[in-house]
Image 1 (spheres, rainbow, N blue to C red):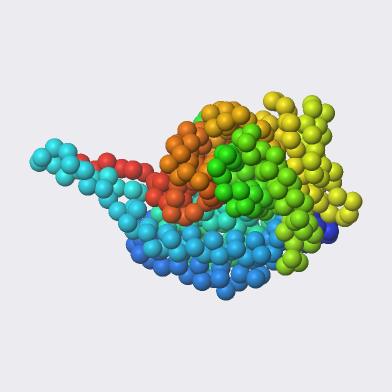
Image 2 (tube, rainbow, N blue to C red; image 1 turned 90 degrees about the horizontal axis):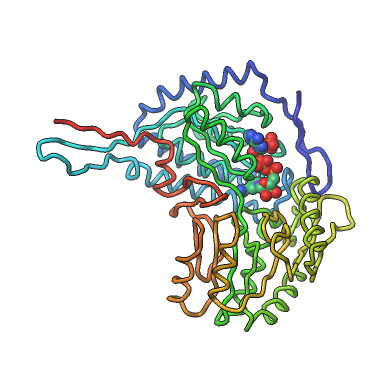
Length: 455
Ligand code: NDP
């Protein structure tokens, strides 16, 4: 069987790959397990060195990798280059800090005993990753886990097989041993078997809550550790003292980054009455000013949606919201051209329980809500089953922090768009998942925090 990757801007086939056969899958799992036995014993300094080389390989091939992402999933080329650079950053970050994060913790216990917590790797970890940041999501998993002494097996999204193979090659070129990082080109129907395999010690997934539930169920029944980074419907709260120019400019960026397909994109714009009309007018104007087009063109702000079927789901959510009483202020129809192009869209008067209120809209569609005051804004921000990120905009930083602390989310930003950063833990609460990636917390997810007591 073969897998095709398609350019969503043109519908053309980019490349064709052979699916991983059952026989090859078995071989890869066996190799990963053997490699782990040696890899776990290598000094962390050596693993750090290889990660640092991976950063060099990424930078050397940045243009090629960026073009691959743009071709396979439609990311504007400038953003694709930024993504490669961010992957190099996370490699360098763990190359610098892994030894410190993995060092034994000495804990004061009984006076006559030496009590220590050691952080030891678990083994082969399966990573199920999405197409939206096809390099970053994988490196965010791979950098901390490989340097911690685990080995990785990747089941990437079916529409980005070229990225999956390229990432495997990057680790090979950096000098990681065969079996330290392997891409399995398998369908999601094979994932259950892989999680159930005795050699797999843990599983991490970034994607929809539906996929998360399926993976968590299997991992739970197999008693295997899981980390889930799922969707979000991040609120972007605008208070009456918000610095309006910067707020509007960032609001547009926060909604449209990656063609609107980011779990931490701002999706619900919650604006207090005093500044609602001003915000809406300027926001619609700025959204309308964005350039939609060929993602390989340097001038393009918004490329196509990653797949035709995803665009149809998005449009269905918009239509249902309008049927239920929402108003469309901009966009709202697929564009009349080849490729999966959807324009910047702004919805208002969105009723409770319309899709634009209580589902994740994974595309360039913003919903703007009017609320009377700060208290109502916080209530609306938290009135969602998701809890990934949130931001608040105000001139009063103390007030901003007070509001940020009340958001039910894994991250809360004041006067900044929600973003991931290797130095800070990343993850969600509620239906946005559990566990943390990045920083010290991320490297400690798939390790055995072993208590050692020496009397
Ligand atoms: P999915 O969640 O279906 O895909 C993400 C990954 O999970 C892919 O590798 C996919 O493989 C795999 N997968 C899907 N179903 C299962 C399953 N039952 N068991 C094991 N693995 C599975 O996302 P979609 O691409 O279908 O996008 C749908 C929606 O998900 C988006 O509109 C968005 O709302 C959300 N999403 C959120 C992301 C995030 O960053 N949190 C990223 C991507 C999507 P395969 O491709 O082979 O199906």
